[in-house]
Length: 148
Image 1 (spheres, rainbow, N blue to C red):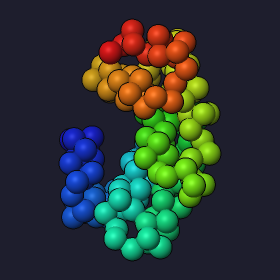
Image 2: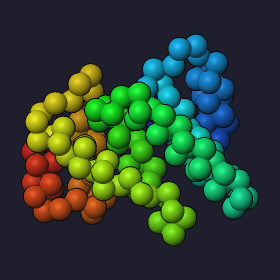
Image 3: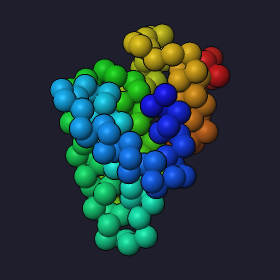
């Protein structure tokens, strides 16, 4: 439910805001919940028209994503969320510093066939996104393509 709502929120600012309010009210947030909050904060930047607000939201998002990663460094889904945010953020803003580390961590999961609680659809979609991002080495692409 949350994952499908998150996909819809990419194009819907009202849904982004309502999901963010709902998740922020949760007590004892898990690493994954924290990462969803960080992703929604990044979507607020996408929906904002003011350049200053966009930068502010991305900055907050990156802090939230780092908190989520600090809580669960091995979680492929969290690493992927941060990778995708940084992939779409213009590099000149300086928020794309973790792309290489996240890419390597994500590929490591595919190399080891270790996806934790990620379902098959997520595994396939992440592999496809990573290949399509053109940020992977030819060797990494070979590993990822086995899962597409």
